[in-house]
Amino acid sequence: MRLTLPEGRARASLLMAAPWLFFLALILLWELVCRAFALPEYVLPAPSAIVEAFFKVEMSRWFTHLWATLKVALMGFAASILVAIPVAIAMMRSELLSRTLYPLLVVIQSTPVVAVAPLIIVLMGSDDPSRVLITCLLTFFPLVVSTATGINETPEELVELSRSLDAPLRRETWQIRIPYAIPHIFSGLRVAITLAIIGAVVAEFVAAEEGLGYFIQFSTSFFRIPQAFAGLFFLAVVSLLLFKSVQWSQQLFFPWSLPRKGSH
Amino acid sequence: MYKGLAHSFLLAVTLAGGLISQSVLAADQVTYQLDWLPGGDKSPVYVGVQEGFFADEGLEVSIASGRGSTDAITKIATGQADIGSADIGALMAAKAQDGSLPVKAVYSIFNQAPHAFFTLAKNDISEMTDMEGKKVATSPFTSSNAFLPLVLKENGMAEDAVQLTKADPGALGPMLMNGSTDAIIAWVTNIALFADQAKATGNELVVLPWSDAGLELYSSSLVASERFLNERPDVARRFIRAFDKSLKFTSENPRKAAEALHSMVPEVDVDVATAQIGDTMELVMNDVSQRDGVGALTKERVALTWDWVSQAEKLSDDALDPETVIDRTLLKAL
Image 1 (cartoon, chains in turn brown, red):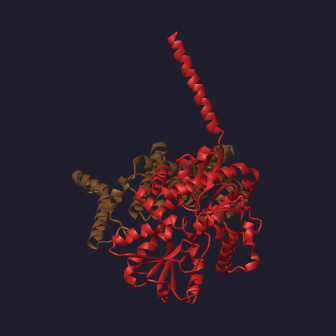
Image 2 (cartoon, chains in turn cyan, brown):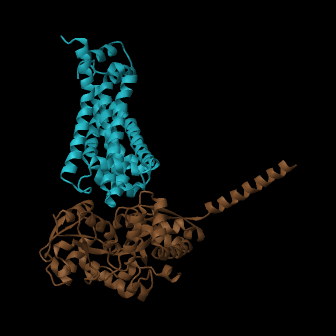
Image 3 (cartoon, chains in turn blue, yellow):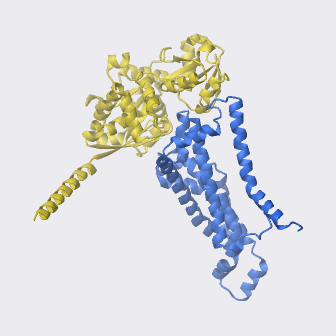
């Protein structure tokens, strides 16, 4: 480590700025391509046209749609946590259960939700519960897998130690296995939260009266492509923020579970 | 003393207000199912809500958007909605496959086929026979596709006389404008939208409606669940009265209708919706409606519709008695 402090700072700020600069360059290139080739809006709208379309829609409408999507995504996300973690723990405790449930989980995961969604809507109606179920179906599998992996990766010595001290299974689970699984659970949560948004949008494509996915579908049905793109970007930003907030909550509540600084 | 009076006055007003909202609460609830997303062509039901036609009949109507005729029919059959709009051809095809389907057509909205070829003036296509050998793009799930071979045959061409490609509905306009297809199949209710796109690229839109080329049938209709018709016949009668009024109001006041739609679905642009209503009303108010009346479902035209639908869906002619999908009691109540 020969780097002196100012260089270190410069390096740090370069690292900070790099993704933003890259993003900005991409947007500029996009704008230039659209203008240079005079691409019609309905083929590929320029970023400036998308920004304009974004502000043409009233803010209150954006928030109505945002809230509708967010509500479903977060409820689905919460439901999948409530289902996935107990299932993972139960599967760790009982081999029979693990053998019974695992194939079913894989079947659920490999069934395309897009194909099942219309059936769920017909069975359960076109209200929030069916949308939450659709979201939950998409999000809970990565959570089960990551939690189960984490629980299984607890060092054997620790488990043996706790058993030699006659610790009950409950304490072994909560004080040794779960804490070891936290980093894995959080990597599962990060995947799940982005899937939750996708799940909510899939559900809105099938049946909804509001929501960002509905808004995008609606905009294309009127050939308002810049407006659809604006909805898409809004969705991406929301998804990114949710992803980040999972990271932040890990930093806040489980700082010890984070990889040490310096490693990637 | 005065304060006391003022208080009792306020109390009386509150009580009266309470009674009024009670009577609003007591209005009969009806769920209306659209067969697609809200748009100018779907505006009559929004007009009914906004202009108070439903409220006048003591109805409180909620509107749910749909994703195609089959989706709407399924939701009405399963009781998620009471009544709604769907293609009568889709209902006939569904009923031919499952005779127990508890849904009936009660009122025709479009008495003409909405399907058409859309092309550009520079492509030199001015009549059906010019389509021979041309590239045509269509969306994969539209009901129009089933009628294409029949329309071609009706005009003396082979069933495969055009080169057909399938693409997402949103991609059809761009494909036509940039020349990757000679024509597209779309509904005449969207003429204004495509005409705008054509104008933006310095082109002129040409529309060849299939109704001019021999396709004579009912399409979008009001369909209701048998449960709604049997268990709440009085509500159904009041609904149809208000809907009929709304449809006529929409035809006479397209801009007001578009505004009613916009106030319930703010994403809909009033100008675009007004233009859509103009195009749509050609399918509602025309020679057929002058002859038979608005909303009518005549025996002859129902039979004609089944004739086309059975051929298009490759069903045998006796797979269905088309009269079994029709219930004219509401029409008689008008």
